Amino acid sequence: MDRNTFTGLFLIAIILVGSFFLMKPTEEEAKKARQIEHLDSLKKAGLLKPAAVAAKADTNTKPAPVDSAALKAPFGASTVGSEQLITLENKDIRVKLSSRGGRVYSVELKDFKTFDKKPLILFDGNSNQFGIKFNAGSTVINTNDRYFTPTSSAIKVAGSDSSAITLRLSYSPTQYIDYIYTLGATGFKLGYTVKLTGLGDIINSRALTLNWTAGLRKQEKDVTQERLYSTVYYKNTDGGVDYLSVSKDETKDIADQKIQWVSFKQHFFSNVLIAKQGFDRANLSVSTNPSSVDVKQMKAALTLINNADNTYPMEFYFGTNRFKTLQKQGYQLEKQIDLGWGPLKFINRWAVIPVFNFLQQFNWNMGLVILALTVLLKLVLSPLTYKSYLSMAKMKVLKPEMDEIKTKVGEDNPTLLQQEYMKLYRKAGVNPLGGCLPLVLQMPIIFAFLRFFPSLFELRGESFLWMKDLSTYDAVINFGFNIPFLGNHLSLMCLLMTISTLIYTYFNNQVSGATGQMKYIGYISPIMFLGFLNSYPAGLNYYYFLANMLTFLQQYLIRLWVDDKKIHAQIQENKKKPDDPKKKKTGFQAKLEEMMRQQQQAQAQGKKK
Image 1 (cartoon, rainbow, N blue to C red):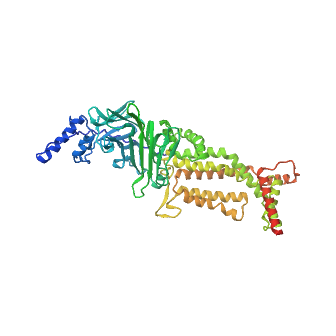
Image 2: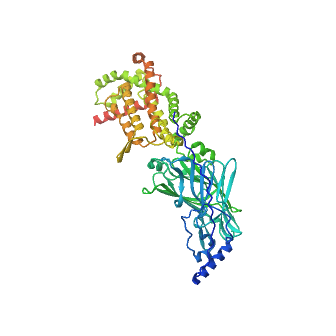
Image 3: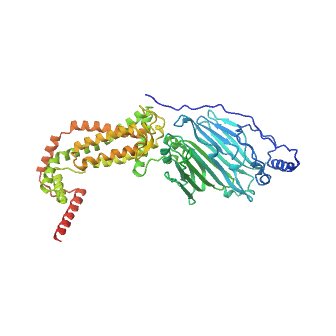
């Protein structure tokens, strides 16, 4: 039994020696005065002393040209510097912080890979912006563009330890903004606290807006499907979870409720910012650029809630969309997994997921877990399957008598024909909808799985038989061009599912004795689903295929117990029984007969006119 597992990458913590270099006065008299102003500004900020921090220096970013006017403004010294990257890592994640903006520069999940086996990096570089915007006097400051001073160059957390690093944006030696990042030895959470010190007279802490922008990178094989499950989710402090459109660009301003967290959600991974005190208001947006390599672009402008000590505790979650993992984080993060609506969500949340979790603890291959899940489901639904088969068998036995009635009454009076059919059904004790109702009752489960499997993280990267990844399609043919209704490939498991459904429809017609148009209508749906499900996960089509195979087995076993001759004899016995006037008609029978009576009266009145 093969089982693909992801092995985490382990890199040696990088320590490159670097330092801030003070600008030396030039020999040119014309530049000397500007250099003196620069040094005075650095002294005021307490940055003239040698830096005690060694960090990984990505020298791709050169120091920006000195602007004497900017240096004189509030936080002027922070406009000058070179970008340094500081690495934080534990067993599960590797985070790079940038001294430019003090922001999270990139996040790598160490135990996971992209679909093409490359390191899985959630976002990286300048496509990610993160900064607090505020006014200092008449100057608008955006910390994303300012240079922070880190207290360490690299931190690797192991065992049961946790560690912290501070990046400081200084106004003066006693006035500054600290970004404090904390990381535990394991897990996907990164603590993030903003602390303002001595800046009460400098900035308005009631108008701090945190701006977060990220271009989310492609992680999965099918970017079209990945985009269908990627958008901005958010939760308000009252417990409600909502999201922006997954199919179109959307911007939403939320000012009437406080926001607990905002998630830049992809198909199988999420980037979540959680505010323990909540955000006062939010402006969220999601957009898609088809020509971009990014899956989607997401933005959030979040107003921090003012508090007395000017401390704003928050935390990031950078991790998987595995239901159990999200549930452990708290804050109802698991609600961003799309389990469907109404009854579909109820079935998935309280029936399918518990059974799936139970089966998963046996450490079977996911193909075997899906097989066991399908068998259990079919056992639960077997009474409905039996009733459906029995009802179709009764209708097949009655078909010769129905043909006689049709010949006697004729097809030119459909109302009378249906009345005669209803009399026959009532005498024989047959419900004409008995074969359909059990199938209708199973439809919510069928559609619940249509939501469950595409959102199931556990299928990602799991192989079974020829299917290399159960979370995406298994292309047996790649056309190299798009075919309307089908796409640019043909999924083998989807094809097998379609063939099995067509065979199932054929045998159903044999059991029910369907003729005319009804005989062929059942063949249309499988063909339509071939195009619809061709790009869906192989795991979903595998489940539908198994369901068809097990239904064949159930019907075969039922045939061993059900004898058409006995059914015919029982129907004949029922017909011999005198009508019981006290026997109450079913609601359906009463409504149908009333409708037929009204139609017959309308036809009679029409003939009189």
